Every structure is written in C-alpha cells, then in structure tokens.
Image (cartoon, rainbow, N blue to C red):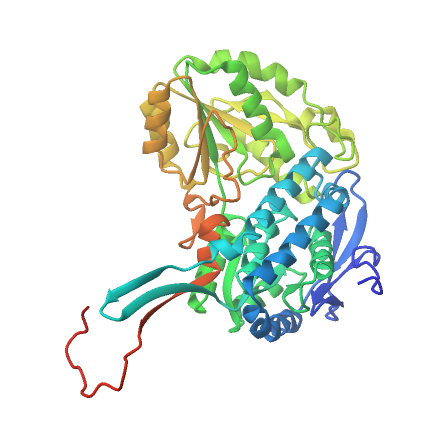
Length: 505
C-alpha cells in the first residue's frame, strides 16, 4: 500500500476501487463534489457506466471462493485491524465528512464512532455465526445447523452518513464470508475510498471490497447483475421501494431502509427542560439530515406552551456555521439544490397555515456563501399539511397539538412512516403503554433518537423498511448468511432395503 498514491489525495479525481486499486471510469461523465460550507468544488467524481459496475462485481465474484473458505477467525482478525486503523485515522475521516457533507466536526466524529461500533460487533463473528447441534435426535442420528455466506453483496448508501451507513453493511457482510461492492453517494464519495485503503492496509485480500462511484446507472447495473446475491440500501422511500422491487424481481435478497417522519411525544408531566434539550439536538443536529431526526413534536394537553417557553430561546441561541468550527451546533446542508428544497417546505408550511415561530430563511447564516439554512419551527401543524406528512430532511421541526395520550398514539400510528419515535414522560405506565401500542420500529423513552447499539438491530416499520430483516446486529448476521441444516447418521454397516414411508425418529 505504501507504493500506491493515496486514493483520496489523487486530486481530487474520485474513481472506483476494484480489485485492490483505484480504477478510473472512462465513460466521460463527471459530477462535482462541493465543500458545503463554502459552495466551492473540492473534487470531481467520475461516474461509472454499467461496464464499470460489472467489473467490480466480477472482482468480487472472483475473490469470493477463497475468502468464503478463509476461517472466520482470520476474517475477524482483518476486521480487528481495520478497527485499529479507523481509530488511528479517525480525525482525518471526520474532516472528510465535514468537508463534503457539512456536519460539524464533533458530529462527524460521532458518526464515525457509531460506524466503528458495528465494526467492533463484527469482530465477534466467530461466535455470532456459530450454528446449533442436537445429538441423538433419533437412534444414531444427530442434527446440526450452520450459517454460510451468500456470495457477492452490494450496498447502496446515502449522502448523510458517508462513513457510518457503509460501516453498517460491509463489516457484517465481509466477516460473514461474503465479498462486497459499495455504491456510495456521489455527493460525498471520498470516505468510500479512504475505507477501501484502510481495509487493504488491514490485510483484506484484493477484490473482497470494491467501490463503484456513480448514480442510477451504477445502481441499476448492480441490481441487474445476476452475480449479486443481496442488496442493502438506505435512502428515501421512493428509491427504497424501487430498489426492493427491482432487486427482488431479479431474485436477490433485499434490505431497503426508506424514509421517516419521526415523532417525539411530550406528555404534560414531562421534564420540559429535558424535552426541550432533546428536541433541540434531535431536530437540528446534522442540520436535520438524519433518517432518525425528530421532525415532528407532538404535545399532549397543556404541554405545548410550557414546552415552547423552554424551546424557543434554545433554538434562537443555536450556533450555525461552518462544520470546521467545533463551537457550532449545526452546519450547512449538503447541496444548494437540497437547501432550496428544504426552504420551499417552509414556504409551503406558511401557506398551509402553520405558524412560523422561528424562521430559518431569515437567519443571518444564510448570507454566508455555503449551503446554509437556519433552524425553523412551525407551530400548529396538522395531519393534512404536507410539512407534517412528508419527510423534509432539513432543520425544520413541526409542532402538532393533541388533546390526549390516545390521540397522540393514533396520530403517530396513522402516519405512513414507522421509523423512529420517542415519548417524554415521568409516568412509567404511560411509557409502557406507548411502547406496547405504537406501530414504529424503534422507540425511545426519554431518549430522543433511539438508534439501537450495534449488538441490537436498526430498522423501522411500514414504509420505512422494505424487506424482512433490519440492519446490523443479529438481523445483519442473518441477512448476510443462509441457513443450512444437516441430519446425519453413520450406520455400522451397509443396511439392506429401501424405506418408502415418511422418515420419523
């Protein structure tokens, strides 16, 4: 690796990683990568053609036989070394996230940590992948099971977490014995190459991990390639539905995590200081560009005014600016186009009748050259409004008032998304009832962003998840392996005579 120029430093033309080295697509299509805080281009990503994607799959397919036969303990040792290298280069990785996405450095570092936790979990694969054994299920008959890798797996990941979300996928897939092709977002692609370099340095054989840059052309090539056995996706619901349907029609295993409208219910007995602090970070952290961001606050009974008394001055005091300044609470959005889309939702909410209590369109930060928008709070949002129904994916929080606990549950359950939710209350009975009745995949009790730790699994319900398994944790082990069950008998000699009845023990 020392002989090769750093892929990330190879100015800043960002190509593919195939078979252990940088490969530049020749199709001629390119896309700009911007520094979100300045609006200036900082790199050019070379878009892959279908042929480029198939080359990456071919490299992964060629590497699979040897890698799948590599003892799981050796595979885990590569991941242990990868973990050490991430810790060594963590600051560099966080800086790349901040430059291309815009996250404040402390938030970028936190995203590296959450990805690293899945790497740590994958290091335990020798234990996680163990099968089961039953002796003497019948006379002289034993039965046992094993989990074996699928083959070539693909991951299609979003712009908002260019390190964390890929690390939800490939460490699990690789330590299970599969090979992997990553298609990262073309908006912030540098982390994909940095991780490829670190995996190579960790001792991963060439071809086990590959990267294909690009857009829908590369995605469709991966979905249609018969050698790809499983596809993982995180992104918007319309794209998740397309990925799920197309991959499933092509006979692939699919795990497609879609959009969200995450509700935080504030009960009248809640600690309002705690609830306000929770809402502040959950709604405006990472400029709201999180699939687990709280974008809808729901106040029960008379909680609204007491919550707003605490929340409004906190929002006004938020520090917004470049992510390189660690004293800032919130950075820019990813692109000018996305900023303008989020701003249009504020316009829409105002037209729909919501009260704009804090207006991010008029924040002083919008005069900076980057893709900035201030935090926004829309009060009196109703179920009929698009700003309540749709995922905005920006620093816009809506507040909806309901008269009762049951009305809050009905409101959340009626929404098409079921990704994450939280309740803030001092009442254990109310919290327990909420957890039991709510139709959402991830629930927090006095925890604003209930992202499960790596040894549990991540995934929503309804139109927030397509496929049968959630991400990472034991669900990830099951997704990236298939079960084989063996029933074994060793007779002492050749037995004469065929048996025609249903075998029993």
